[in-house]
Length: 346
Image (cartoon, rainbow, N blue to C red):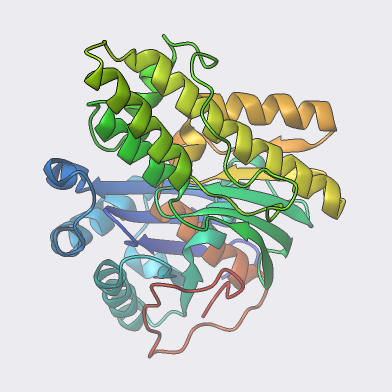
């Protein structure tokens, strides 16, 4: 194995996506994915037990598909990486069990990795080596985080995070209010394209002078949307779904990008990485690009497929850890549903 070009297989099972990625150095060879989202749709959210069972059924076929897509044999693998947290405990355990089995059978090192740090690492597969320090804005169904990244292999610091609903969770709940399908991100994005983002002046949470400068809150915004829609319905008036979707989406993107640019300025960082499932939102990407350009900040955003949960991001971080000479994880590595971002590899 060449330390700078290790062949790493990554396992991601933190929520409802079974992801297996194959990476050589910073080159993506395969990104196989199986999703159980359709099984959760009728519940309006992810059901942990259903997700765990779906991972069990999908794991081995997804590994085989990834290796075949990459054109490599299992015996070629130099290291195995796996999401150890944060995430749903039962789902994480399925990925951990599979990763340990493959690492043991292949006699290669095992690297447990932090799900959030992996969302940052995946950008290197598309845009090359990450500038250090960088700032990362990670926005997903479970997390809204601002991270300072001096060294992705060893040091990541949390500057701010959501204090209630994450942005993706708010998208799901607002979509339900508007009668749109689950998950809510894509249908709201589509509906918003036909709407007026200034139609309704929804609140921007935690943006007052006394509020935490880098923390996020979307619970009040979600409630404001629900009350606005309910008031229209009580009055017997039609709900302008496109306008509400566009106005809600604008409020979310406004807060996220303003705080990210502010954090970059405050910490003297001129590179911002945008990641997580909500980073696929077209308005968030456009507003981030606009504001970063105005502030002289280099914006790096992976393709939408790489923003959502996937095995490639786990393999990318695993490859970086191998190249940096970081010690592998212990064989008794466990799942940690609330793993702090400061712990890149437990």
